Length: 274
Length: 329
Image (tube, rainbow over all chains, first blue to last red; front, side, top):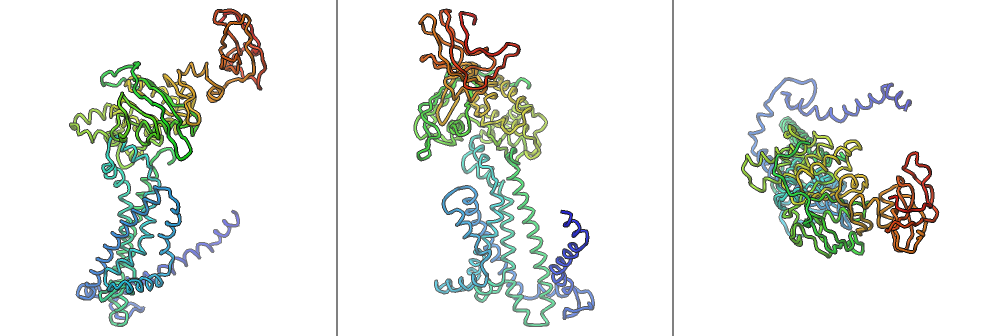
């Protein structure tokens, strides 16, 4: 204990923590800085402030198409994986049956599988099935990798959901559907919204699977990757990247706030164990 | 607790309110409840007492409709409950965890069941207010469940059930989560509340003092079977067997024989069975194990104590194991 305290006092630990944060976020900070720099090449010293890279963005049809595609894919993938996640999370938290843990692990596995392997395997299967590559196949791939995240968020929301709450509702005369509408849904709504946001964010940023499974239509990350071949397009990419970064950050923050609120709600109930 | 403003309800009567007929609940080969039969009277404060796993909660949940008997019949107010789901039974329950809806405030929790009845707004408000008065929670209607103490949550759970005006109120270990002082206070309040509203209360508890203090009658249960159904006094003074006597606590166990002086049947105030004239135990506050002849003739208890003798009498000297009796009781 005292050794630990001396170590802390020596400042080594805080230096390490500082460097860690710098390495983690310095590159990310460069992105917005260079995106408002008037020079076309990202290097110091900065030549002047401009918003023209941002102003150019809406005037690029290919980018708008990609953004629209990303929106469609993101919404579809997040809704689909959240619905599937609700079913799985409910079954895992509510019922006890043989193989429950194994099934849980299998659903969570895509989290640690190399994405490129998943992408290649999916591509092989889809081609074998004779499906043509399109936004729909990207959605399928994204659902696969989103479900583990959706499950994590939803399980946290469902766990500790006191079963006696639903019994109490029935006891007070409410039907099964009424109970779902008046008790279950309001209790888990924050977790569901949080899951939608997390999945949307993941789908929005995902590159490898989208790259393998796309047909002719590009999503935003694929569009960005395509633009990187042209040096002159770099500032626009930086501006777009900054926007994506901000959107992701915002969505994840909202998702986390909602997830915590859901967990607090369900776990605080019961009174005697809280 | 203030007297409730609502109309007087029927007091305790001899009319059966709940009838349990040969009810068995099996889970595979395990019988959680084994051929239980019981009649609970209207307006009665009835307790199901026993150690954990004795089947008392299983029985309560079957009365509420959360579980169904494997065989046997449960009826409430003369109506068979077979096939009737929990939401259509004339019973309401106070859950062990209270099960207060955390996304609703106190008033909304209490009004939860009333919403289904589609009452006039003013009538609903009046009944919620009345229920909050009954449980001494006036002025806390806008509080969220998360802002309440354990005791207050319990009162909300009580009000939420009572506002439905059930024929039977089921209480599943309602006091187990409270600290000792609050628990004793709530015992008194619950008993007073029951007498004020006149509803049949069925309480599940593993706390023998709680059962003895609050109930009109108690069913003592062991291993899925009902061992004895009687008034608290009867159960304490005349437990049917050693197990019941031991569970209620404080019993001195002896191996003794009742020696009859004149050959006629005699009984003793300690633990039965009387048929084979074996005295088995006595309570600490009694002078000892004694025998009494119905006609007043003398009888004696002769035997040996199992272990240390607990005595609740002060200044009364050592408890007696051998005592001649005429008719001093």
